[in-house]
Amino acid sequence: EDEPFPGVGRLMADGRIVAVAWALDNATGKAGPTPFRVSSDGHSFTPPAPTGFLGQTAKLLPLDGDRLLCLYRRVDEAGLWATLAELKGDQWTNLESIPVWRGAAMWPKRGWNEDSPANRAGTRRRRIDA
Image (cartoon, rainbow, N blue to C red; front, side, top):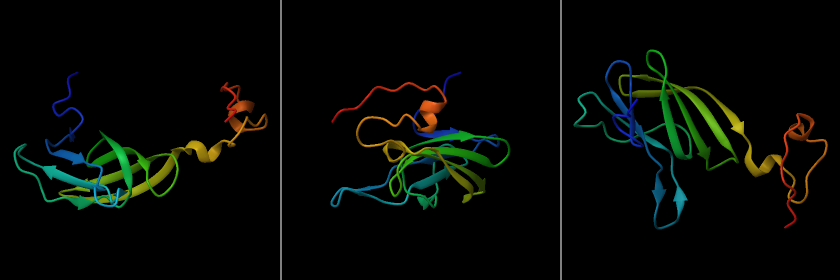
């Protein structure tokens, strides 16, 4: 199925379009709170408002009703995170956030740990000798 707004926004069940963006201050190079915008007509959008998290490369998945799943790389903590949110009108409410993957923070800096959960589960990864 073709996406009506590839890489920009997602179509909710009620026809609204919701979009998130990576907020970056070009002068400092620091990320700001992840904003969202909503359109009910496909032409005009609400002013940017904060989602309540600091994330980069956020991707949205509309769920049932007014709920959304947002996956993103956190700026303030390592890893890939998932946030279940509710969008009532143009009000974004985070219901729950969990880490999906903790990134480099979950692996040793050199070599690899035979006792790590990934290795106990049979996951293979190459040895890193930096």
